[in-house]
Image 1 (cartoon, rainbow, N blue to C red):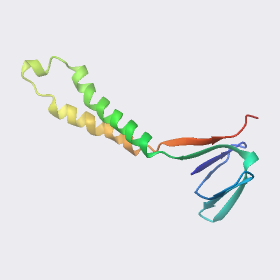
Image 2 (image 1 turned 135 degrees about the horizontal axis):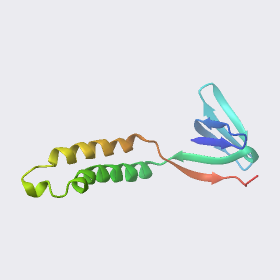
Image 3 (image 1 turned 180 degrees about the vertical axis):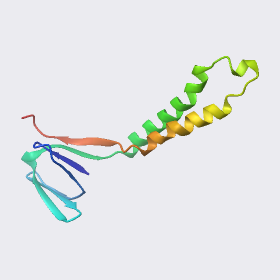
Image 4 (image 1 turned 45 degrees about the vertical axis):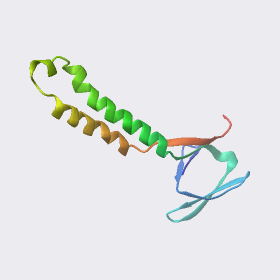
Length: 108
């Protein structure tokens, strides 16, 4: 969980409790209590987003060699290796962490 505060600080950790007045986050050196009025945005990891963007990366990476040289396949050349390399490079998008915003505080 990632808690963004209005003073540009970010608290990353695991939620212990969430009440209408206070959010308690477990961080490395204990617990951090954050008043709800100081929270600008609350984000949590999103596995479906990560899978979606990763699949789009694989598809795009595999499609780029085909679009870059559409006539290569017809001339007896194989672009299978380039498609596999492109898909592997596109798969690196899976490594980028994705989050979803579950709470937005009022604008100040």
